[in-house]
Amino acid sequence: TRHTNTPRHATRLTRQALRDGCDRILAVGGDGTFGEVVDGFFAEDGGPPINPEAVFTPVACGTGEDFRRTTGAPGEPVAAVAHRLRRADVRRVDVGRACFTTDADRTDADRKRTRHFLNVASLGMGADVSRRVHASNAPAWVSGRLRFLWAIVRVIRDYRCRPVTLTVDGQPAGCYRVRSLAVANGRFYGGGLEIAPRAALDDGRLDAIVVGDFSLIRFPHYMRKLYAGAHLPLDKVAAFRGETLTAESPDVVPLDLDGEPVGRLPATFEVLPGVLRLQH
Image (cartoon, rainbow, N blue to C red; front, side):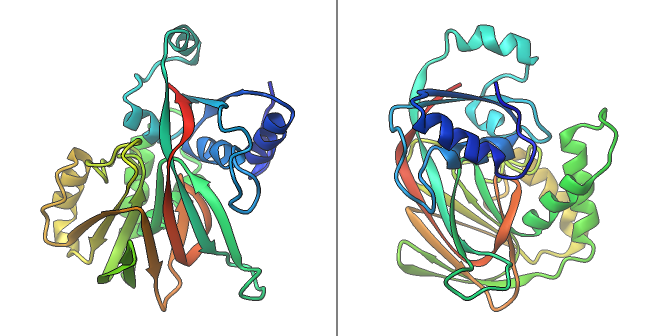
């Protein structure tokens, strides 16, 4: 058993364990921890899987628990999870890979990073919301959903929509004034928002959901639809599916992977079909 204590520590621990011959990684934590662990299943800088037959077992114990919602696993005490996992099946699922720009003051080549994500890559307001949730000092009894909802309310008041140009599978998909853009492998993010209701972990596709510049007076309506996964027909929402997606902007647009801030646009995303053995 190893405990993490710094950012990216879970990635380093996972890589070392797999290189030492471990064939099963069980992680207890939130979506950010799961994302770091999954990145550790691959060699550095977007390299190949270290052990393609290794199994990942996530045990949700975090703020949002959105990946747990995607898998359909019940919310339950950690002690009860061990009993359930003795009977759980292992299946192959997709993983997302993101090549993005860091905020560091370096040369263009040094500012590029490649990491993997399990659930959702979020751009724009969604990334700002994640940063605010991480900085929150809310009491432990405040639920993850309430923390995310309060952060959304705080961020949306002052958020300025950014222009983002999308390319999906090599084809132009348009330029949008974006409040938030999710590139989704899973269905949920933001503490229960069903941002990508058509997404599946094993379909070989990423779902890109654009939430555009709707008026603030329509905020309650949009939030109800987002929680219910019924927002795709709304006039300021656009949805795409593909194997690769590129997002670019002349502005600084922040990016997070599985709820953890990593950098900004421009970024390219691709799906790695069936590359991870998952037990849940």
